[in-house]
Image (cartoon, rainbow over all chains, first blue to last red; front, side, top):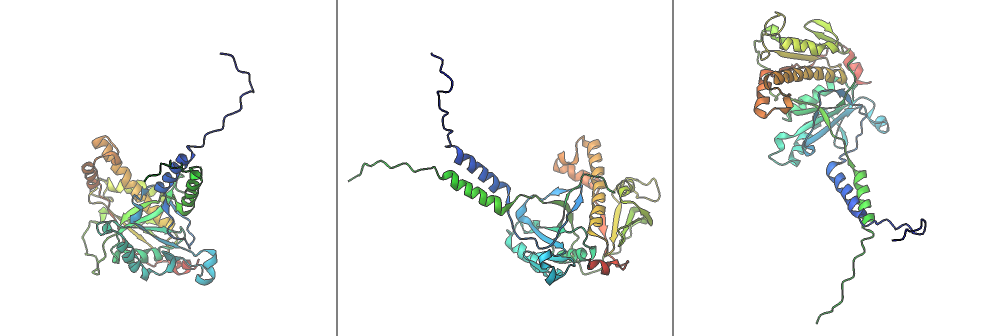
Length: 157
Length: 186
């Protein structure tokens, strides 16, 4: 077999036949591992930090309540005092019971008892408003509550 | 009558483009954030005032948080970094020190905060209490079964949890400091 001279062979084109497969694989990965963005958050939330965190397992069972000062574009109308956001609207604590009922109606009957409410609250919000929310949740019989937080690595001051 | 025409092959060249399009659509419309947090169970609502259970004062660890985010534990000011160790000491006292609890099953932590307490402080306190109980349960699981709590089976986990029941009771917040009204507008 003669030794081929360098430079005479043209580089073969890279086959792109498997490209769709690769992209589909990526697509399925993202479809499985992510969830649909449910609502736009209209309040400013600087998350609190904690160490003893539990991961929320079933996303479909979780309903979110956001509490914090309204974002810049809503300040003129709603002021800067912390507000409660349910779904896509600013609400008061009186609306929570209806909200819980609606969220519960969306779930399967068997799973309704496992519904979890996750509170996403800005760190400077005062406890008065949180307690009102908690009382309303108790009245609505939504007892599984999650205080959403991010992991903390540094020690307490 | 049959045509014997061979079916022309479908051009799959644009498949990648279509898949990319879908991929980008999903990348944009979905989020990946996994929600983590402190999971708690609220007590059920009842209109009647809570029954007056006679608990020996020594079994209760009173924690008060005021509107300035300062802690008062058993009537003495305390730094939050010491709260975890004090809670552990209270729960595992087993009747040695007359100030603290009789045994872990009877020990209760009573938490009361002001309406002006910040959420940040409230979560920090909750976190420290939970950390204390988690550490105690882990220690017990290690000595009894040689494993961490999360590695035990359900029956064993239940046993550990019954030995160290999570006794945190929250009182209705009080409006002690005037900061609550002022803090609302911040």
